[in-house]
Each structure stands twice: as structure tokens, then as C-alpha cells.
Length: 347
Ligand code: KG4
Ligand code: ZN
Image (cartoon, rainbow, N blue to C red):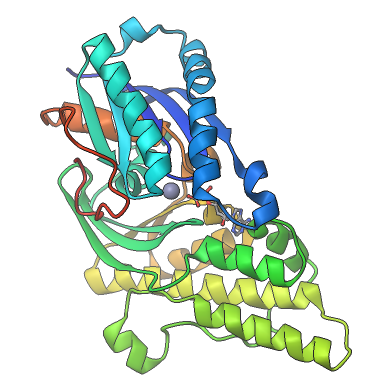
């Protein structure tokens, strides 16, 4: 099959995503988010997310088919995220995908969510060159990958040893009495702040840490440092300079992310860097990544935001790549795997 029509289903976190592609052409990218239902808890509640997927599945599917101008009979194959992610949330997508594939008599491909993020850029129009280093930063993951071949060779260079970058934004926003999700709020507050006002720690960046954790990240120490700093101000009866804290915190996160990603490109002799995940919406991250990549002669790719955040189109695109590479379908015996390693591209 040269240009299979693939329907992709994504339910690993709080977005119900149904995407449809024809080969590398995007036909539909329909998304329902349960973010509002999690806002009052300050973070994603797995059971709430799973139930929301269940409710959103049929309408999201209908809207994707309508956007693509096709019917289920036109679909050549189904692809689904089988992991990593929240177990209960993943199970809803896996169940829906199995039911669809079985009832339509179409092949089913179970794919890795993180590799899906990396593959999303295929849909942006230009050819993606490999090998490439990929930095995935979202509420659930912070991973640095070396992608030699999307369908056969993805290596995990490093990842966060505690909080994900987006999670750190959400937690620090809460400390500053800003609503969830915290990333956009901190970005906004930081606009009028001084990024050099407070020197917050850069996790795992000291020479001794770089020896052992060169490509790993840690944001929990940074979060604690912000908490201590804010508490001290409050205890002293002073007003907390929210804009300066937001700008200085954001600078620390961005500095570490970009420094480590560029180091990986340099060390490995790979002059290409791809960004993915919801945190890529961060204005300062885009700016610093662009400046430093330019200075280092690294080609930077940032997919459109609708393909950076969780979506079904990236899952469909990866499914299409697997089909075009001649891979056999996954069958029906796989299950949701919340800790699926990034090296398992297809389950
Ligand atoms: O990829 P995503 O939509 O969902 C997953 O977590 O998989 O990412 C959501 C995360 C949240 O933690 C949110 O605070 C963060 O992305 N985020 C941002 C920005 N917009 C969203 N973080 C920093 N700056 C932003 N502008
Ligand atoms: Zn994701």
C-alpha cells in the first residue's frame, strides 16, 4: 500500500484524539480535551480522564470522519496508542481501536505515543531527515531521543528522573496562585518579568551530574527552590514579585532543556533537532531554541502546535509509516502498557 488511509486513536492522557491521514497527508485531526474537568484538581485525574475518553470517543470519531470527508469503509487500517500513558485512559483507546478494526475487518497497529510525537512532523509537509535528536516536553514526559529511523531505531538518550517539564510549570503556577494549566499562565506572567531577577538552580547541570546524567532532566529541585523563595518572601511580609519569579523559573527550565538538547546534537554529530509536546507552546523555549540552534548550525524543526500536543494524527501518521515499511499488524492480543519503553515503536 503506497498511501494508506489510516485512522489513529490517541487517549494516553487527557486528550481524546482521532486523526486521519493518507500516507503523509493530514486529512483530519479531531481532539476533545478533558482539561477543564481537571483544572480544579491542579493536574490530570486518571479516572476522570478515562471516563471523559469514553464519552468523547464516538463524537470525536464522527467529527474526524466528517472533516476528512470519508466513511469508515474508506479506512485501510487503524492505529492506536498502546502506551506509555495513564492505564485507564489508554484502555479506552485500545478497546475502541480493537472494536473498530475487528468490526471493519481492517489491520490494527498498536504504536508508541512518544514515537508518535516524533513522527508528527512528517505531516507538516517537508521531508524529515534522519538521524535527528528529538526533545519531547509535555505535562507527562521530558525525553531526549536519538531517532535514526522512525519505524525501526529510536534510542532513549535521557529523560526526567522526577517531574516532567510541563508538570513543573503546573506546580509552580499553583505556588504563585495561577490557574491550571500553568504553562500558558507562567508564559503570560513572565512577559513583564525579569528572567535574571532570581538565579534558580539548573537541575542535573553541574559537572558531576553531567558525567552521570548528561541527557537526563530533574525539575523537582527547581520547584522546591521556587517554593522556598516564595515562602521566604511571604514570611517576611513582602509581596511576591510574581512576574519576576515566573520569568526566572521559565528561564531555568528553558536553559536546561535547550542546553542538553544542543549538547546531544553536538556530541552525536547530529545537526538536527526536533521539538514536540505541549511545552513547545512556550514562547521563550521557542526563542532560545531557535537562537542557540542557529548559533550551533543545527536545523531546528518545531511542528505546528496542533501536532505538538497530544493528537490522533501523529498516531495515524506513524501507523501509515509502519504499513509503508511493510510491517505486519499488531493483532488483537496486545494490551495497554503504561510504561511502554520508547524503543518499542510498535507493540
Ligand atoms: O502535550 P500536552 O498538551 O499534554 C501532555 O501532557 O501530554 O502538554 C501539556 C503541558 C501542561 O503541563 C502545560 O502546562 C504545558 O504543556 N504547557 C506549557 C505551555 N502551554 C502548555 N508549558 C509552558 N509554556 C506554555 N506556554
Ligand atoms: Zn504526549
